[in-house]
Image (cartoon, rainbow, N blue to C red; front, top):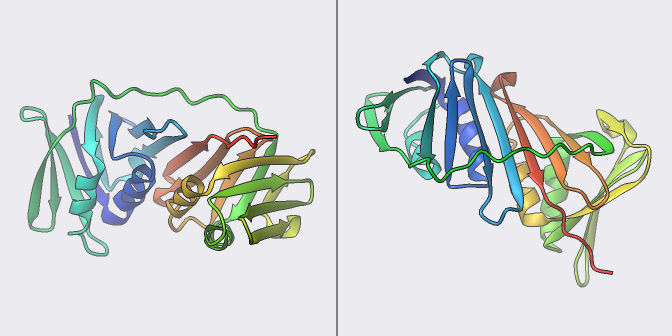
Length: 245
């Protein structure tokens, strides 16, 4: 059983985060809220999302799983205006999700969850922690996309750097400690990542002003940020590209 009301803006945040990695997802629903974990088809990136019941306008549920086609949710959200609230209800008999937007009702067939696993989040004790302004990060990525398809993230005790080098040009974003909300890094750390994946993740952060990053040398990056006015939390993991000697 699942019945809820949610702001269109909140559902859009959730959909943007998920669609950055996968087209379909298994929503694990309990009386406390909604969660999901997913790995992208190439097994390069992972998502761990939790939305508390406080993130909904109304929420009533018992434990269940809903397999949802994310593109279909996007289609429904296109019908919603600013300030709209969507009604969601699981029709257990027909195994469909019923969504009401204004005077429109969409009955959405659910995806079979039998083949969808719940991947375990690896316990990465990464040595560097940074809290970075999201807009600064986005601006650096826009510059990097013009010159290369990969980006190096470098943390030291006094700064954070993002370096992208192409065949002829290079781009460098350097943020000293004074421009970071937090920087905890005792030894220099550096990892190389796919710019396409990393940029897509950062774009999915939405209006959240800051993102927390945990990095280590040649380790995955862990990006964390809040959604739904602090009632939801997202963790992205992205595997590094190991540089050849």
